Image 1: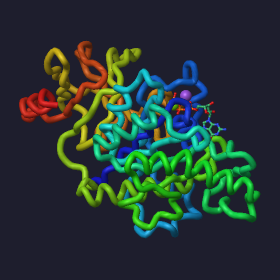
Image 2: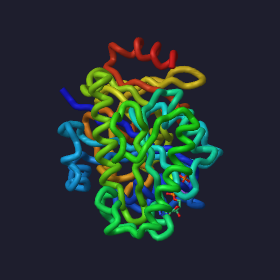
Image 3: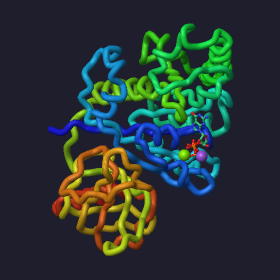
Image 4: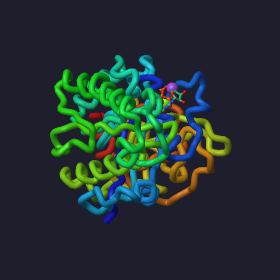
Length: 344
Ligand code: GTP
Ligand code: NA
Ligand code: MG
């Protein structure tokens, strides 16, 4: 039996800090290397559970359950208005989501669009109220929010400013869209109220709180939906088709369910028909590396368990396009898989 790694999708308006937040968690610099400072593709990275436990060590007592999940697969999406289709594709993969909202700017068109995607997919979510360091007078530090949110650390005016922005820019607009929402420390029923977690991607404040909340909620969601065990053939979605030296056309993909094995057959649904090919190599990015801009080389593996980002090398992928659904199956399951991907 393998425990499934939940998929966490990060959504929100352009420049509200999605990629920078993930950079802070991963200790990467992806956002600084993006053309025009704009995310233009879906990203993926794995955050191992050990990293979450270490970052949130001061807060682990807040959780009622032990963390059993192997980690989180985090999907980064673009916030620019031009990329609605990528937000929808990322949103459709999510077990749970982080909606990133600049606490100073509040709700913007793509914040609302993101919420509609989450509503459509019935995806539970938390709000990361980002750029807390820019609240006037706020003394932001690389510590859990719960340890930094009190009169000993913050000037009364800063606390007032914070409460005003939290309510006007985050809670009120959520209420207007039909959601109960509150600061996560004030939420009693996690199934009814959207948790708002103040963070700063710049200083790191609130990141332990965010990681712990999302890991706890994701595990509960998988348990409640009986999705904690992984079995059966791999199901996935193509993120990008890439030419790689020595490998030819490869695909970067998310496996969202099941187990992929090298030597099995990949069956892809394309607009002009089904593509079947044999998997020559499965390559996994290193934990904490962003798949679309990795620090390290991908590692060849014989097997990949959902959920995971993976590069797949196989012959005859020329006609494959981003967004295509696929299965990875043994030979005797190819016909069944063809029917499934054509129906998606
Ligand atoms: P798109 O993917 O293009 O939608 O943007 P994004 O949401 O990923 O935002 P990005 O990470 O590109 O950050 C946008 C800008 O905000 C960058 O200049 C970041 O340095 C800055 N930024 C992000 N988070 C914070 C924060 O918490 N505090 C401050 N002061 N600046 C931040
Ligand atoms: Na940006
Ligand atoms: Mg980004």
